[in-house]
Length: 331
Image (cartoon, rainbow, N blue to C red; front, side, top):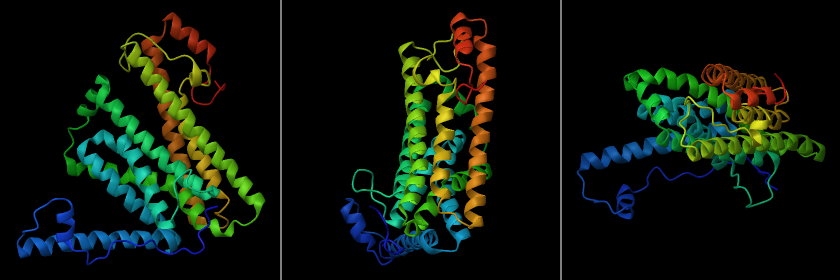
């Protein structure tokens, strides 16, 4: 079982790493001016120092520094994607932010990947967060690239100059960092979890998180496949479904899976919070934030679908049969 015996900082490349060696290994030309060499080594040294600072803050820095380190990683990721597309701040960049934050935590705490060892609940939570981020970013990138309406929607949002997109990236990055905070404290508090009954309680949160991850992934894939098979764009005038599988739980099962996933992460991490105000406040704000986003999105999508598909027999029958919008069986 993964139980870090001591919270030691994971080793990073030396600041004195020879840039000529890197260029040679990558097949680059090692001939460069002295100024270029110094500048490149300075940049490499700066990046390495920043990585070391984030690693220390995550593992053994004061509580607020740990969350600040997650925010720094989140912002660096989201800002990069937002410079490409404004829409990426809350689509591909969202998934990438969660994945990179999770990868940073796993590297800092020495968490192995799934199926490589018998993992403790905290390690399973970290892996769940990594899987969720990678899957979501990959799916949204595929959908945005292959669905005409999504491509058009992204293009319409790119009128804002790139530098003026940074406030948006800043705001959403803070939310994403708060959402991942339970994983940080689960890993930090892992050594204190020594009673079997605590492991079992924490495993309940792990189970909920993986269930939510599965529901969301299945729902996204189901909808994407049905749309492709029926040659229908998202938001087309004719209702084509899907109406089975996870869509029998509620009308927006991917949103339900998203909320369920983050709730499981919160429950799994909460058993390590104890009296840590930073952990409770940041994690709770993250859960409230993503829940508000998902409930608002399901409400808007319900209205849009009713306006577009209302009066169509298949849609009316489906809506009458599946009464829950986001929460299964709850109208």
